[in-house]
Length: 132
Image 1 (cartoon, rainbow, N blue to C red):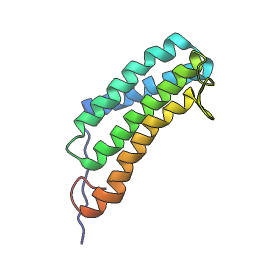
Image 2 (cartoon, helix red, strand yellow):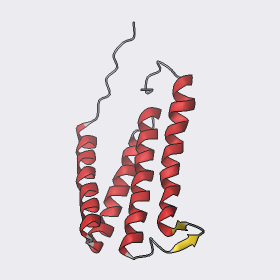
Image 3 (cartoon, one colour):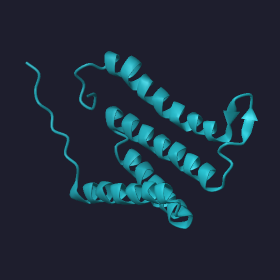
Image 4 (cartoon, one colour):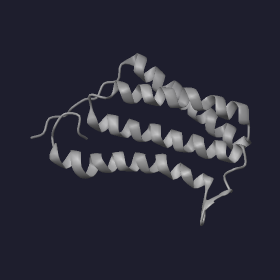
């Protein structure tokens, strides 16, 4: 019978994660409302906290990979927002690809990290602590 494992987040970490959500929402609201200075300013705390969260979970592969994917997601999202704010999102890079499509690079990095976890790491470490 498999035992239940508990993932406990220290309160000081949880407070940071909750604040991270506030910054992320302000960034996305600013994007939606085209509040350029606030949107750009919110990139930094949002991205920095996501990297700190990833660093703090580095001992648990499942948490680390998901938190790294979130950091890449925020990076892609921030680039996309900036490209729209400064109106270079629709400029053609080559063929049918615009500068907005460069956001696919960090999005793809996040997907590749999760693919590594779910397709390679997790199947080889079934039942191990830190593998959900």
